[in-house]
Length: 280
Ligand SMILES: C[S@@+](CC[C@H](N)C(=O)[O-])C[C@H]1O[C@@H](n2cnc3c(N)ncnc32)[C@H](O)[C@@H]1O
Image (cartoon, protein in one colour):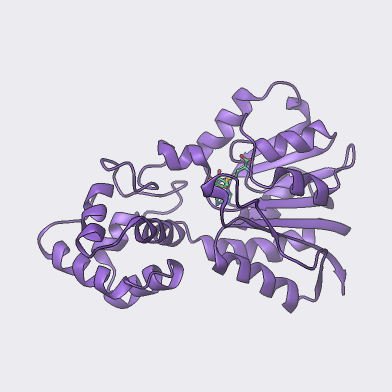
């Protein structure tokens, strides 16, 4: 099993107690869930991607009677927790984004390296709209909101002009098609990373899901229970920070907790916030 991002810090801040309940809202490949189980916690693990759930469960040895796994969107965390009798929990963990396995190929279109993949990017089948649909159908204003807004990409306008030139004649269908657009306007790897991440966020409505999940998660924890959010994008971190401030919640650390920058480049921008429901 892989070592998930910020594992030591997650374990330190979650303060797992035997037989207490924890929700891992993004179970993924299960690294965090497994560590909570090993410390004696009971886990409800949620993931949008049914393959993540299936493969984690199949690879898990032991603990199967201490974990409940549900495929679903964490924006429905209230209903999922109620069904699983996981209300009044001691902690909820969100490790946002996608896993290395999903990037390497289980979800087509996520990685700019898999040139022949279709530009799909959907983590589940709840949405009809793929990244390719967005690129071929959205108007310039909405595309700008995605590429410049979510992607923080300075070359957004030039990229969009090029997309419009191409899509008059041919649909942008594959990762290779999008890479060619980005190469033509002189975009390097950073541009590719930003544009692909921005499209994934749009396809999966990631910011909206996070906002609604936080409102629900805070009602699920016991007094003094903890919510941990690991984010990889400045907008995500802003959503968490504003949620804490607006609701006068208590952040348990002064400085932002960040991943060791010498670790994998994938984790370069990981940051953790920990807060509780007791007011300041
Ligand atoms: C960074 S990975 C989590 C890795 C995990 N902590 C581990 O130890 O392997 C993020 C996971 O969250 C899932 N995910 C993303 N958005 C979600 C959502 N709205 N609801 C539920 N799961 C989501 C992804 O499918 C992915 O498996």
